[in-house]
Amino acid sequence: MYIPEHFREDQPERLSSLIKDYPFGMLVTAEGGLPMVSHLPFLFEPGPGRGKLLSYASCELKGRLAHTARSPARKRAASAT
Image 1: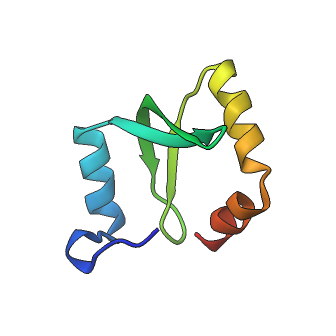
Image 2: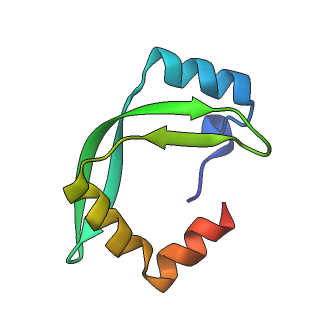
């Protein structure tokens, strides 16, 4: 995803602080060609590289994410990060 330079943040400590202060976010997926937004709590786990963004999703949402993650375009996008 393109992120304009003035919105880009790569410092893990600043990302961690931001997510700690505002942990509720939106996860956007597509189902049947239509976008779907799920509001979820997030945690940031600092680590090598950019760290990990963690969240919890219900079984229904996990199934939808597992289905969309299997598409070749999503696999390429996920492996590029």
